[in-house]
Image (cartoon, rainbow, N blue to C red; front, side):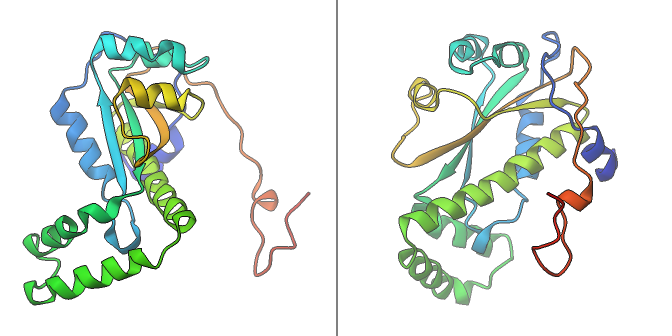
Length: 212
């Protein structure tokens, strides 16, 4: 599927075909493609908890407001997290860059020192903002990859965050929950949604010309 087709055809699906399963290898492939999203200084703060066990999915039902049907019927539900303590993986990030030919080994320590110093100069608020931005980019890329692979998705932003993190044994002091993403094959047509004309959302060369 062409990228433009994936963008235009991606819609929120309210119910999935429960007979359709997605193998973990294919889920892993989609997640690997999602991880090619942009990231400040290549810090990659996104984390994914994949829920493909039916019993686990059922436990989400009373924690996702009115979104129980897509969670229960999806082939998998992915909890997308932003890692506030990404700095703990800085040595691994740099090592991967060397191993994959993106960084010369002689610059390994210099790169690690730079990233460490950059992190130390950030406030908690700045860290939070950046990891949420980067993880949001990966989440959107994942939705497009899912569509390009012939599947559908439902992004869930309204859920009991504390309860879901507790259920999945996620460290709440480290990880910020961004969204739940239900993935599967649509069992019902998507509900159409309209978008504002560009004159309401685009202004050229200044911020004064939005239609109001």
